Amino acid sequence: MVSKRLQEIPASGTIAISNLVSQMKAEGVDIVSFSMGEPDFTTPENVIDACCESLHNGFTHYTPSLGIPALRKAVADMTRETDGVPCQASNVLITPCKQAIFMIALAYINPGDEVILADPSWVSYEACIRLAGGVPVYVPTRFEDNFVLDPALVESKITPRTKMIILNTPSNPTGAVIPADVLKQIADIAMAKGIKVLSDEIYSSIVYEGKHTSIASFPGMFDNTLIVSGLSKSFAMTGWRLGWAVAPEEDIKAINKLQSHSISCAVSFVQEAAVEAITGPQQSKYDMVAEFKRRRDLAMDLISEIPGIECNVPQGAFYIFPKYNRDIPSAKLAETLLREGHVAVTPGTAFGPGGEGFFRVSYATSEEQIREGISRIKNTLSKL
Image 1 (cartoon, rainbow, N blue to C red):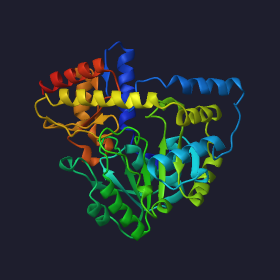
Image 2: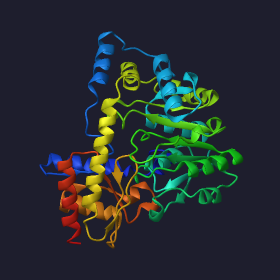
Image 3: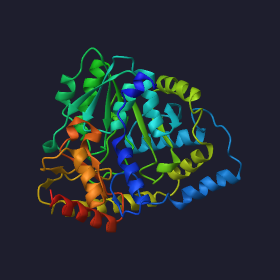
Image 4: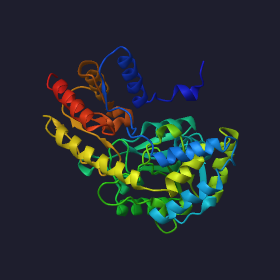
């Protein structure tokens, strides 16, 4: 029998839908999939070329567990210059983004420790918390407030057992961007209470209105923050499995102890490609963000035409999170849309209890697919 800790972990709602989509496609069913948070673009050619060159040069062996120096420096320079975070190469650990979150949970959360996170939020946060023996404490966010955390509510959830606050801005699944003034209030609370903040900034480059702010950029807050980010979303590098953690040196050393005993190091030749992604031409990234914005606007126009659907305009990432008025659980609605409408969405409850009554649509796909898929949603909902 599997361990008790594994039995307590919920299955990934996004992966479950994706697996069903794959099965139906294999059976010959024409599916429009809005379920996966993955750009449909190909990784920029200069990055692919850098990877191929690295392979041909024989860079196929272990690297330092912390990552190659050139990439650690590139990440630190970008984080410092773009986000105003006072970090150096010694503050960087190269690792897959999900692995970073998992290792941080294991490194800092003891059995019974409480971890505060927004509701709704990405389901893997809860899984990592529970695997470490911690207790997820959800802070409700409101559709009417664009799903932005209320600092007063965050503070009200803090107890003597609170160990960490997890933030994700821009947000998966809502696309919400936490304003700088709200982040400052949360930073003040965290510093006053001595609580670490895990800031997931994987979508920080995909912001349409306003500007991304890192909570670690506020005076004194870097010493209290663990940033996780990477290239999966901004450079269409989901399959490359590379990201990083940025944190004070003592935290990086602690997390690296886990890395050295698990994956040893990130993939060598992918690290050299990542240096090119960060330091090379950036136009491909800008073009992708511009295209995501066009797709967002199209998706919003089309979804707003469906009776009984409301949706906030997301400021970042590549998701919309529509609210529906049908008396049906979101998991059942997603199954109905897939089996009867042949369109895949992710049920809101895959992102926490506050996701009931919502579903997530990823518009990281073509205009043709967006038009066809939302048309299928409209037609299926009209029959319910």
